[in-house]
Length: 140
Image 1 (tube, rainbow, N blue to C red):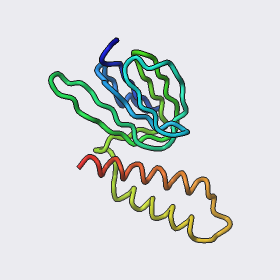
Image 2 (cartoon, rainbow, N blue to C red):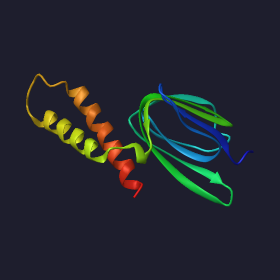
Image 3 (spheres, helix red, strand yellow):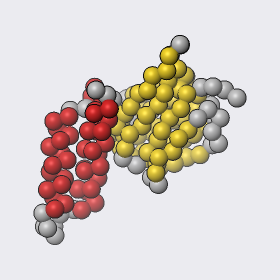
Image 4 (spheres, one colour):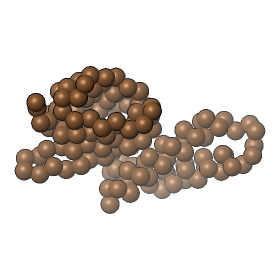
């Protein structure tokens, strides 16, 4: 069995990740996180908002990379994982202050008691902001 697999993470704007040396990946599926290793059984899953983390073999070392992702799909094959995400951000691309403010706004909407608030939209904004903050914090 292979020790690595090909990984592609793509958004409508760009290809964010392309490697042929991924050793493992954690994907935020709609019903919870999935851990994928080389040779995994084929599957297709819907992505949730969260953190994608993967370990890439770079010669004599392995390094873990993290991205904040939101919505989309992942296709898993024994030798390749393809993630089609609405958004995917590396830690260096995350504006932490903007994410903090977005989180605060979402929390205020959810706790305001205002019946005109779109609760689902506010929850989505809160999840996205929290995922960004979590990924940025782990990169320090």
